Image 1 (cartoon, rainbow, N blue to C red):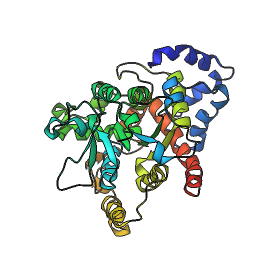
Image 2 (cartoon, rainbow, N blue to C red; image 1 turned 135 degrees about the vertical axis):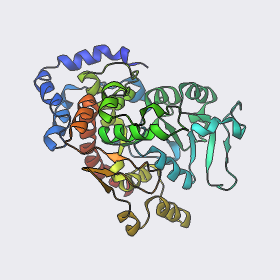
Image 3 (tube, rainbow, N blue to C red; image 1 turned 45 degrees about the vertical axis):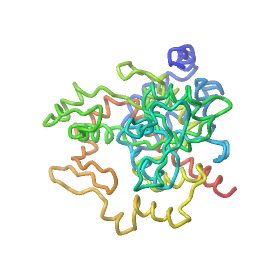
Image 4 (cartoon, rainbow, N blue to C red; image 1 turned 90 degrees about the vertical axis):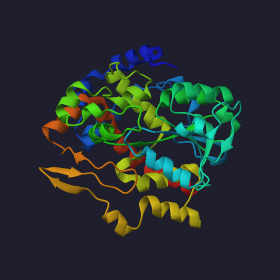
Length: 369
């Protein structure tokens, strides 16, 4: 279901009494991490009715206020690039979850032409890793998974995808609803990480060796093609399409009502919450081993901080799937430029940090039932 079909809804939102009095404030708060900045989006709630989110989210995804039922639910993990999704995937592989992701239809494993959903173990040396035979990272792969009945088969525990709108619309329905999870990251930090990562990531389809040696201001001004990536992806827009305040409000509502949100900068706590929703724990020996591998001991955590590389910058450093690079300092001209060019994502992220705090009590209540 595409975003164009909801243009009347956007007009309704934008014409609501009192809404225009906060729009100017919103656009001045894209770098404000304070409660004041996040409160602006919360103030829009009274202007939205119960049908203010599109059918694929309303009908195909489970409301955050609905207690989890792990044996009957399929998790949909939105892998936002450079936001911790790879670490989540590897952790849940370690914990023995059956995953749908990019490797499921890799020809080297011999299951890319199967005519039914099958579970297979791709690596003899890691028997805990289990995939289903579809690729849920591309539209073509998602359509194949839909045709083969991936979710109704109940053979998959977690679906990883970067194309969240398309996947939710095609893989789920009102009889097979998904539970959506995601890590979110400060949009400036995510953009900077992507800029440095794609200069060297020869294995990625989006490898960009021409960015090497480029000033980040030049890249942000002339070469970054995924500004306001999160808002656009939630609404199923192309990265070349513009977004506006109506899109922001719709994206915010979808996240508020349907997403179990995690923060990359609070990953262990985020995973704890995800595990409550998924019905998982670290109780057995294997679970403890996975936890130590990905989060380590307190001593190991202290060693995984950022390191100073001079000139007011720091280098990001962590143990798993790290991409050490210069970190743009908040408040610097470079930071402010990238934040300005991703203003709607900045506003949404600031709201998500508030939502993350609010969801803790709800998710903990699910653990006690």
